[in-house]
Image 1 (cartoon, rainbow, N blue to C red):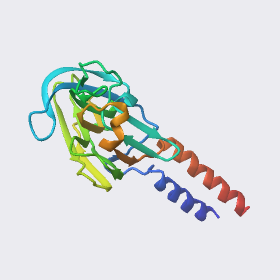
Image 2 (cartoon, rainbow, N blue to C red):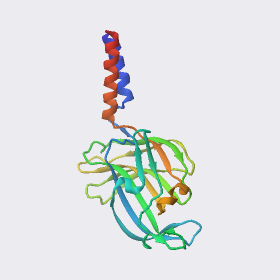
Image 3 (cartoon, rainbow, N blue to C red):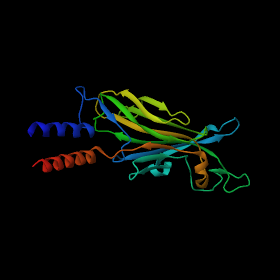
Image 4 (cartoon, one colour):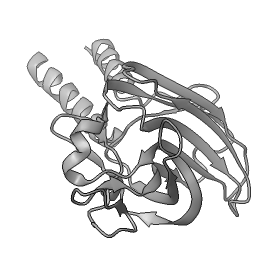
Length: 235
């Protein structure tokens, strides 16, 4: 009975991702239990080429994560990353081309990420992994997964990235050996770049849908509940 229970505990802990390697390497995922931060950099839009491209820098600021057109569905366990959209018909954002409100007038560089400042990801090999369920974006937009390791004053950083190819689905995984030291900031998340799109036009530009998971604490509770159920049945 004791041996069987130990096996059950080991299996449940492994499923919840609670085991640590001897070197304490860490794997993180698309975890909707974390605090996801939004940051937007805005550029003018250059339409002189075959595809829209960034022009001159305009401004940057912290945005709400959902304002990046990023949305978690905890019922479906998904994260959807859509084309960047500003619900304001002002000519600053959209070109008047006879329609309402017209073509996008800005290049949007949207970063949605989790930032860890407590040192738990510093001096380790960090892997950011997940699953792309669908990718219907057009060439007007690109999606990149990233890990960034910043100095305490943000003056420099190391990074690892993976650009999602058009129509790509399946697993993604990137790895970064972060620097040790107090006060470093490790970020992992996604960058979406492209022209801003009016809200009613988002669907025709596509999106990326990723598998999302609950926070590890929730998985641990589920696992402990399973242990209790098995134990109760065996008595």
